[in-house]
Length: 149
Image (cartoon, rainbow, N blue to C red):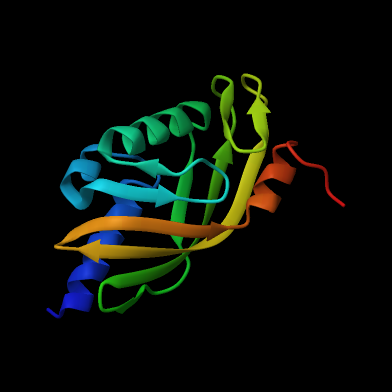
């Protein structure tokens, strides 16, 4: 397999096992560089295994049905892989204060469903960076944290 195919396989596994319907946090140790950067517009940037695991644990506790999936074939060039996705979940868990623009009280029952594009950089067979552009305005509007125009 080519470097690009290897990198796409790493990202496909990450998307499935970290962001998919169920989350296996051991995938962080398996696939992420020790100082991996995880950055999306909805949340503070996260760095390193412990920070990324804590983020996902809190996110999935607040949104137990959280699920994201790919909507197009992955594109790879050199050390970079690009993926399009959609997903979301229902806030039925505890209060959640991780959004940059506000907090949710416990169990609002509000649903979010949104899309995005993510660029991942692979270094020595590990994910060094995951930087995504998501439709955070849609998610935050659905959650009642911002008002529609």
